[in-house]
Image 1: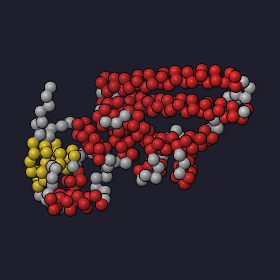
Image 2: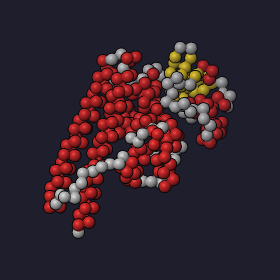
Image 3: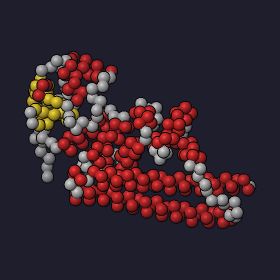
Length: 300
């Protein structure tokens, strides 16, 4: 079916417009240098692109263009050019989210909170649905949501760019009470992801089987079989992941919105754990190779 744009563009009185009640960010009011530049630009050249709004009872709600709206309001404009379009809460949220991700205006924690609200709080779709809507991978969405398992202190360091997402994901499996110390070490010594993984193995006091008595004539045979089993384990986990996604979608359809939050939350937790297990299979494969290379070098 051909898409028909039914939106209209009109001058709307600013006092009739209010910020979105489904805003993906809570920091539109936070001042930055870009806001001052925007105000100067609008004062000199006018508003080039109308803001996007939708009609609601007793007025209109902003869908996209909060910064432009605030800039025009600060200039004491009475009217503002608006593109008016009918849309649902879900559509409005998706448009806001896509716009902010394209502009890279959200920090990783803001993205994580928005993703959680879409999938769990509002129950509008699973991880795969959201990933398609915003043009990101399922892993990207899952990893962002996983950041919310970190302590509040650690999340603040991510939001302030003191700790990047790749490193944060590595420590998300560490108990919260131990995260502060580990994060301090990571930032202080600028540890790489590889070093963080080694540190985690020490913390876990990871015991491995003693292969000293395994002859290296049989080592390659063992390693070959081990890798084969590891690949099968990884494939099984990916199959399980797909089944969990199907269950999330089934919950969206078969369970009433006010009743499905708990089950979707539970399924999302399972999904995150499965992703962690898939990561562990990859690390296990690399670790086995490292052990045998080390022992072979010692014997030689």
